[in-house]
Length: 493
View: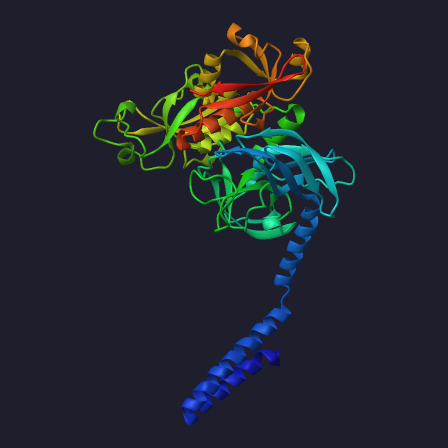
């Protein structure tokens, strides 16, 4: 038996015996002796165990593994707001995708930039070019020269669970190449951010602050499972506002993989389409959805899920038999608690891929719910589906056929290729200003690369215009077939 573990106990016995004889003075000595015992025992235990040292070593190895793939991103450009266009400089984070020099970051880190610089972990600075951007998911890809790069180890967000230990990397408040740790606080989160249309975030309590945006979120193996994107500061707020308050949000790898590979391959992202409108249970009085009058879904259905309020004719949802009034409880095995989870999960799939839905449906008696499990093959989400008013404004202005510009379309129209939206058909009243073959390269003084970019920028400006009583006309800059440029003022209705 080791005497060093017995000695503190003997001290306590002696001090307790003295207490009976010496009164108040002994009480103080006894308390001091107790503290000494605790200190000695704690010191002995910490000296004899290697648990915390092993944990220290593991986190050091994660830092050594991940840091070479993390980059700091600096940008300069022009941004438009209520007071017009102004120059800006900003910075964020990113991570190396492959040895070819592709770097992944947030769209809001590089959006509108004219110059992008990437600093590697060893201090080297390289100029970067924008390869592609997806405004709806807030994901972007830039490219630097290849050579001497260390791509990140990519993991899977499908196996991430609440309580998992995670590590966030980036440059918070320009403290470059920082690392923080925490746990996964929740999955499938939506924060109602004004700058992201598809939200299916991993919620973490690892410290995420301005400058962390675009940095990798890794698991205990150093594999990237998500990308730090936002701080929850209230629904409807913009990205990057506020400071960390215990709720950091990261885009899951499942969405990143889908978007990044398409941006690298072709510059345009095709997303899956289901064809339903949804509401959270309790947000709508459902008497018109086949539920008995005077009884709400809350009274009849005690589980979680979201309510199907409309089904688009001819959509995959209609073809598989989804009905108005159905309650979707799970998508691909993930529990559904918010209505915008499903659009985000569907958008992370490509057209032609399959999702599985668990559905509760009121039976013919109107008293019981039956459970269904349906597999749905997704269609393609057309860019104009979520921007009907923008499509209408463009049609009224005389734009009959707009497509994402490709080298093939440019060759067919005998014009030089530029990233943007090519005009394939216009009304005669618009032909002189913007002839067929013209390529729209910016909207609202911001660059666009795809038709979806055009719709998204116009829709976001229109939403701001309604909120802040801004001008209803916005500039579209196009490169004409002869190489000259023209700015057209589009009236948004």
